[in-house]
Length: 240
Image (cartoon, rainbow, N blue to C red):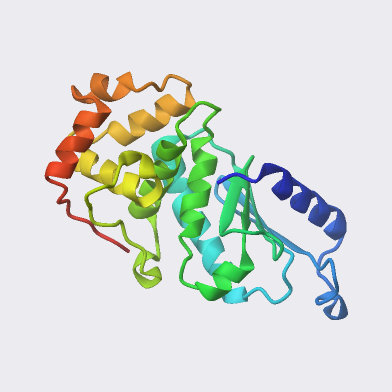
């Protein structure tokens, strides 16, 4: 999901507020405009963690940080070794939605995370959007489908979050996006072509994606592949 302008404004405001400040004083923690910023580096990657919510759970923050340093290097290694090396997370009480990512900035709703404290793999989905770095023209349903595919493949807490790919039901379509598309991609990887998701991802990033790519790589059109999936959608799934 994208919310570029809002995320950039948030990050800029926090950077300005925290410049030269090692740690906010206790009496400042609950004032309007509160902002805390940490920068953590492990190996090749740096995570800047900005919180505009003084009540945000320290335990949730740590889980998000741990998830980032676990999954982002794996996603980068598989899909895009040239991805950004520095990512920013912003916890923003004013953000409406669950999370949104653009230009290396992922904005998260503290309300959502408070109500769904185990949904840590929202991080896995969002940072995959950073790895994708698709220019305009990539189908939105495929973009989100691949991001949820990455959440399935690399998620660290999907079991406790009770997040799963939905069983196939009549009336579904690959353009439904997110988990429906992700399950289709898992099925394709196990039954048709193991490298297909990588090839779709690469084509979307290099502006070479077209509907013809499905037939070129598999011998069947996208609609033919979906029909085969609908006729026999069983696929073994494993969650962490």
